Amino acid sequence: MNFKGSHFPKDVIIMSIRWYVSYPLSYRHVEELMEERGVQLDHATVNPWVIKYSPSLETNSTTANCLFKKGTCSFCITCG
Image (tube, rainbow, N blue to C red; front, top):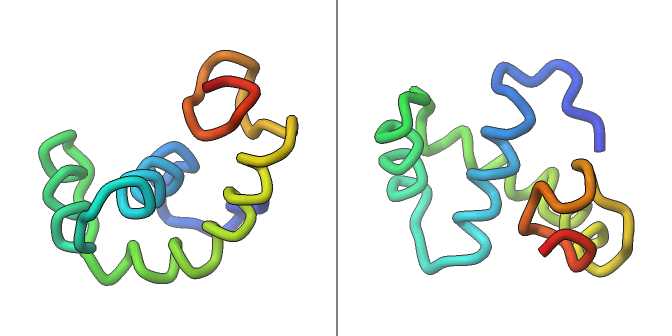
């Protein structure tokens, strides 16, 4: 996955997508969770991330290709 040109760090994007996909949250709930953690983003920003990156993350979650070092994420079968 290519995060080049993103205005937010890769970790923020992936965490936002993970929360939205894994739990019954709205984009506004994800916005509030990120604000509690000191990240200012608009809820409308999360929608394009979900559309663009969630298919790739789903593919990675079913393969051994992890975006992070083994054992540092809970998004894939290998790590988590």
